Every structure is written in structure tokens, then in C-alpha cells.
Length: 341
Image (tube, rainbow, N blue to C red; front, side):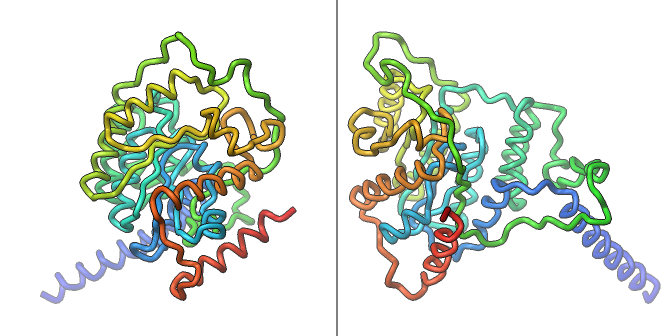
């Protein structure tokens, strides 16, 4: 009996030491990444404290500032987005998010309904999202979708990122390397803003009505977006389909997405429609980072305009005078200091 107990104790001790070394090595070899950090910091938000969840790909990651929304309107929000986020990832991230929060609104960017996502070519973008996620049934569902599409990527390499990054030690100066743990608290609440700009100009006849047929929806993407919307409906959470400024957009795509939103019974808001562009008053020479993303100045303008719309359309609460939200004032102060010239 004593011998068996010693064996069990030794096995447990070995597993504990191995786990500590494994996790430590992962933190040393992990590439620091803002998107993975912001996705992970979401877990530190107090349960059921987020009023609005923003989901989708890089235009919403770069273009929406929860801190601007907080300072102007007083409602709380978080952006769980990543570059070129596949609809399968959006669905899994949202389903996981609703285990932690019960928002009053989900804002979904789904321009990628027109795109075919190449899992084999987008491993880096996939890992930006998944490396920040905790292990859960939703993460495993996403991984199974990825590995079904690309057999070179493995479940174990996503569950244990060290198996993918183990050769990074060749790139590091081990004498000076420091661990890079995932972010635990974010003052930006998921936003990863971009400084600087390349002067842009709207294409000729941008968003003008045309007889040209828009591209067809990608059926796989459409299926995941439908599941995402349906999941929210089952939870009694309104959904807003949002299109953010992008110069490679067309009137036909906008109308097709509006029809889809009507079929799904949700609101659609297109920031590139002429009436909305006039209100936003974005200057393409200074407010865009590139043709598809806002820079910091553009994200502030966009967030101010969108905040007013969301407040009026959805009756979102104002928590600015509530003591339990004091941390949001502190985060805003840090945000304001960081973005100042």
C-alpha cells in the first residue's frame, strides 16, 4: 500500500513539475501578439458586466474603441476580433463569450460572408485568435474545423502551442529572453488601434447604384453567420450586422447584405452608405490607415458616431456614476494617456 502511494505521489509531482516547465517554456517561446492578448484579457472582465460585444475581423478590431464609447455614452463593451477572422472562429468565440457575459447587444461584422477562407494559408491569423482562447469545447470545435480543412495543422499544436513554437529558441537570445505571458487585463477592451496613415481617396463612383451583380455569398461562411445569429436569438440577445468603412465595398454588396439581415430578422448598418458617410465626416486623406482600416483618429470619429446610434437605438445603460464601474474610469485615463501625441 505504501509503495503504491509513493508511486502515485511521484507521478503527481512529476506531472506538476512537467506542467510548470511546459507552461514556462511556452511563455518564453510565444510570440507577443496584441490580438491574442486582447482576446485573452476578456476573461478578466467581471461576469455579466459587458453591455455590448463586438465580433469579427480586423476592421472592427481597429475601428471600434470601447473606451471612446464608455467616455461618451457610459455603456461597457468589448471587442473580440482578430485579423481575417474566419466565420467559424467568430461563431466559437461568441459562443464562448456568452458563457462569461450576457450582453444587451451583439454587433457582428460579417463582410467575410463573401469570402472563401483558406485555412491552409491563414494559420498565422487563426493562431492570433486561438492562442488567446482558453481551452473549451468551443475552442476544440474551431480546431476540428481547421484540421478538417488542413491536415498539416494538428489539434495538439493548438491545444499546446509549444508544439508549434518549439523551434523559436533558435531565434532568441536565451540569456536575455523573458517570458511573455498572455495579457490578464486590458485598458483597451479588445481594441488594437493603428497610428499613422497613408492618404487615401474614395474610388470613382464609390457606392453608386449599379446594375452589376454583386458576388455570391460563400455558403460555408453564410452558414456560420446564420448559426451565430441564431445562437444570439436563442439567448434573447439582439444582433446588429455592421459594415465599417472599406473602399473595396460596393452598393450591390451592401444591398445583398441588407437583404440577408432582413431575412434573419436583425438590423443592418452600413457606414459606407452615403447618408452615414455624410454624418461620419471621415476624411480619407487622414482618417484611414489603409483602404480597409481606420487609424486611431478615424477610430475615434467612428466610435463617437456609432456610440450615439447604439445608445439611441438600443437604450443602452449609462454606468459612469455607478461605483462598481470605477475601473472603467481608470482604464479610460490610461487609454487617454496612451493615445495622446
